[in-house]
Length: 125
Image (cartoon, rainbow, N blue to C red; front, side, top):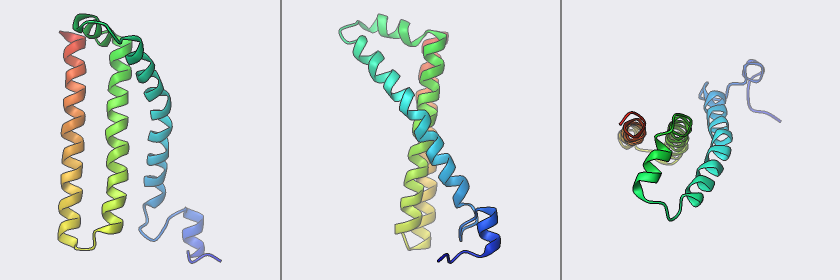
């Protein structure tokens, strides 16, 4: 038994009218994070014992820098989507909900940009 209207079932929309897009974004970022995280963990383990210059040279490679930027962007977007759902579901005061969502989005943007700019500095510097 479904509580959704027939039109809602056809369009794939929940009661908020945008749940499907959010759900897909969460799943796609999770799917992208699996190989990126495995690659990053293997790379960091292989770099254990290396000096700062060797790690900076590694991170300054165009392919590695591109993968690091993808990892950073996907990580913070995925984290933001997850925290957004928690705030929307469990914060009932509208003022706190809006403030929490704004602070979460701002933190995700600032932290992601900081990481991406750091990688770009290694790439271009």
